[in-house]
Image (cartoon, rainbow, N blue to C red; front, side, top):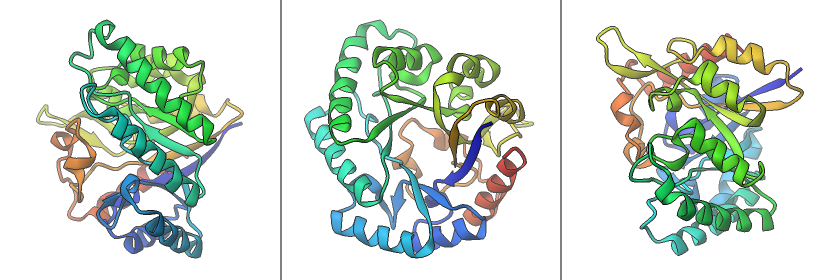
Length: 285
């Protein structure tokens, strides 16, 4: 039977690391997928800063489930050699933080419905990233995201099969839904055997007809059925809470695919939104 471990993007609780730790402890969460630290993306932390972050997390008893990096969240015409250096630095930060999982993406493409013209370029770049990661003993974990090669189920499957599962699958219900794709059962049925870990947010239509992000179970993601199915697997799944229920510092920069248009500020504070999201997923965990 599967084991589920709750983690979170704690920068949605507060930008300051000390307050992020406070929010995790208040909500009974022992891990974080580290992304924004005191206003700086984790991939841009100096090694000295990373050591200080590790010191604070160790003192608080908080582990790092994954590095929420922006690797692969660039266009095919952007400076890829500089991006390779960013990956090398991110890996160095990950090792200081005691983590071997780096969340990444598969590049923004001109048309997510016609991938053939860019396939070779995407796979060549992913292969170079993977070569660096494997040499350092870390996993690259691909998140399905709007606007990238791996937006669709077919794009994700192509990546997973091309690299024989060496690039891992991060399953995000809301990102599929907001791309016009049924997360459950369709996407789940295709990808369930490949899921390495999950990001937890839901999406659907509000009463006024607009599309927005919801707490798990309040949108179209069908989280109850998802977790019933996953229980049968003899695996440990990290489940990273990614509320997106209130605007938080750095959202525009972090979500270049424009999830910010789906965040409706339903709650008075980021702390309240984070707590609501944590309570929602606990119904299923």
